[in-house]
Length: 441
Ligand code: FAD
Image (cartoon, rainbow, N blue to C red):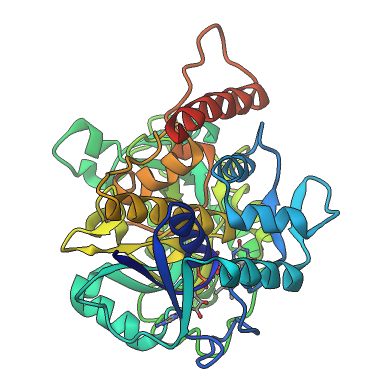
């Protein structure tokens, strides 16, 4: 019988191994810890939580990550089961006692008759056999180089420089307008790929002051290397001079405000972030500001006063591939279909999202070894929305790691009047549960 090899026993690799073994497939996990360390892991356990001890909201009726919990439980996920067993009181969040949790995942995997482990660093993409690469944001350097050699220099990133992403519907279009700079683009769609928020001189200076005063997170050792030549955090640009941003990402040229005859002093641009057009990122606004500070500062932008954020900006060490160009809808490398990717390296972000992608990769790989093809869950489920986003729904050119959120789901038709946001989220989760149950069966 054929074996499935998984590189990385983190969130994704552990779940993938469990799912494949439960389907009756023999699995070997290749994990470099404890022999080779990362800067964030402390132990040799599988599924170590490297930072917070929370799997975030457990509300499966009105929250997209809570819905992902529900789907993983429905699919008999190991990570969710062990999290439940080591749950700590935390209001609506699923927080866990991290060491007993990781020990329990490790014990379950060790005890499974079809799973064995090999503690070694894999330094090259394997040629033969069936593999899942689940080496995460801190993939070792040698393996990352090998992935880069096989996929191309532009296809592997070492850093996230994330600009904040807002829900399109929360932008005030009585202030903002749609237009690409100099009306560039062939089609009407391209000419309206941007939203523009105008600023007066006073608004611009108040914004710069707030940006400079905002609380920032510090860089880790080694984090700045190789990063700064690419794209600077917005606050670092502002430190170089009060006009720098006005000559950079906030330049007011090539744009005409249809709401006001006066020319804006600066313009903040938002670029469409997904094919559905439900999400827009703020162009050039990658930042190390703390989350609370970001919301306060960005809401000073005219047009964004009532904005809701699908994700805030950030800059971290993070290894991830350009999944929209590299992977097929089975999470296989198009150029080498014996290799799947799973977890954070595919461009999802977070423990839960990473485990969920491991769950899918494990089931898909097992099905393939048994001569079947398991279709991905439909896009109106949380897992389906995520896999659809990374393998095709996201814009490949600006691809950045993504948390699960309702902006990734096909919109719900608000027939019968505009529903309140809470009711609408409930409609999303009801629809998802039905579709996921059908997919599972
Ligand atoms: P990991 O869980 O990192 O697992 C990858 C595994 O692969 C590791 O065990 C590693 O040792 C192993 N490995 C790497 N290279 C090789 C190799 N060449 N050969 C063999 N084994 C290898 N997410 C949150 O939801 N909340 C947080 O608070 C949070 N904080 C974070 C803080 C930091 C500093 C970092 C880097 C990430 C953080 N994340 C957080 C994101 C988090 O890492 C991921 O969400 C999650 O752990 C990713 O799961 P994964 O399985 O893809 O990778």
